[in-house]
Structures are given as structure tokens and as C-alpha cells.
Image: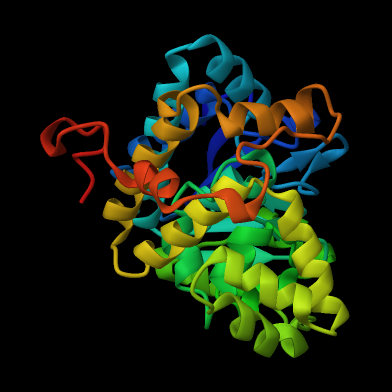
Length: 363
């Protein structure tokens, strides 16, 4: 029985609700319509006795799998942020509510995180009961490259990575593979590429006692994956535990290791203002539950697009990366050293009274 067609294909097959993201030319980047479709089908299946568990995957131009989700639709965000389109407000409110639902879903939600898993793709997978990566998984929260911050609950799940890995991933936007995702607590196991389709198909033909049995079946097919950044962990913790962005970058630039110098060069390309904001976000989020983190991020995104006089770093960052593609964003301030505490503090002031917050209902 097909529940939804178009950019989100949703079908109950056997005892499992199967979702395929079907916007391959955009690497399954989430539109407002996709967010609404995902929310509708998950709410419907939540109380459907026929559905023991939910499985979600992406697609590429050749068919299923190959790319999970590259994030939110940044071209839409640029257009909406430039013109004041109110749908941008709906997008973030509804996306974050979807993220919260997935983290709190009452049935096993299994994410097949093959290929690109970035930004909003992390938002619809990190709350899964089982997060399955493959040898070609490319995972990142690259938002500082576009003058944004790792949203969709990024403060919550990145701050819970071991040591100071969360600060490193959030500030640099660096990409990691399957083994490091598992080692850093951002995935549960690796499924070999040639096993993906057989496992997916078996979900619709096998008989399962309950949702836990569906999850256990997929988990039984997972294999070990090598973590490549084990040697960098001590450096990550050494530098990204430092007190502020300026201190971190200065220490990295003073180092004689290639990893440190390369990391400093990456940070110098990111939005100086948002680096400071993101470091504060991750460290605040360590003491928050998911609902409070999402409310904080909803406040922050309003500031990113609408409440900063003169310029949105995010609109400028998307312009440079994805619209004009000149890769020369005019960040303001232009230097890490010129960001003041007052500039950062404003992002953490809510534009709404508590009772009127768009995510006030999250618990």
C-alpha cells in the first residue's frame, strides 16, 4: 500500500514502513514539501499496528541507495532569506519538529546512511534506533562553510561525541567515513555495500515478532569498519578543548604538524562570526536535552536570516558556495580576531517569549 509518492516514496511492505527519499538530482536535499511528507507518514505509522518498524534510505540517479541526504535545500534558503519569504520560518520549525519526532519515535526507525549524509540528512538519521553506514558514507555538518551553524539538533548530537570531537566537526565541517562515524558515536554499524539491497528487500519478505526483531535482523548483518582518525584524536582534544576560537586557531597555526596547520587553514575559510557562535552552541548544548537544544537552534536560525542588521552571513555564504559559486564570501567581520563577545551573545537571545516559541510544544 503506497502512502505517498513524488519526492518521498513511502510504502508498507510486509511489516515494515519503507521510505525512499526520491530527489536524486539534488542529492535528496530536503524541501519543505519533503519535510511535511516525512512528518505526515511517520505520524500515520506511529499508531498503525501493521508497522513494526520504519526503514529510510536515499536514492541516486541510477536507483536506490548511493546518496542518503545532502541537507536542506540551500537554494530555497537563499531565495527565501533574500526575499523575506515566510516559508523559511515554516521550513525550520517543521524540520526541527520532525527531528524531534525521529529521536522520540515509538518504533525502531532504521536509517540506511549510504553515500552523502550531511546537514539535514544528519537531522533525519541521528535520532534513529539504528544508524547504518557503508564504505562510501561521507558524513559531515558543513554549515560553517555557508555562514550557518550545525542545526537539526547538531548541538545535541555533536556535543555528545567523545572528548572534543564535537567542536572539531562543528567548526571545521570536515567529512568523516564509516569507521570514524562509528568511533565518534554518530553511527551504530557498517553494512557492506553489496548487502544493502538484500537486507532492505528482506525487510519486506521476512516475518518478525516485533520491532526489536527488525532492528536485530539489520544489526546482525553489520561488519566492523576501520576508523582512520584514531591518531588525530589526541590533537583534536588538545586544540578543540581550548577556551575560544581565537586561541584554538592561534595554537593550531603555531603547531608543527600537518594536521594542525591544515585544520587552521580550513577554519580561516569559514565565517569568523559563525565559528564563535558555533563553539558557544556546542558547549551550551552539552548541558541541554534535545528539546531545549532545538529551541535554542530555532532562535539562532532566526538571527541568522532576519535579525542581524545589514547582512545575513548565511545568505552571503550560500550565495558564494551554491548560487554564484565564486567561493569568495564577504564575511563580516572578515577576521576571527575581530569578532566581539557582544556579536555572539545576540544569537542566544530568543526572539519569542517562552509560551509563544514555535517549538514550545517539544518535550
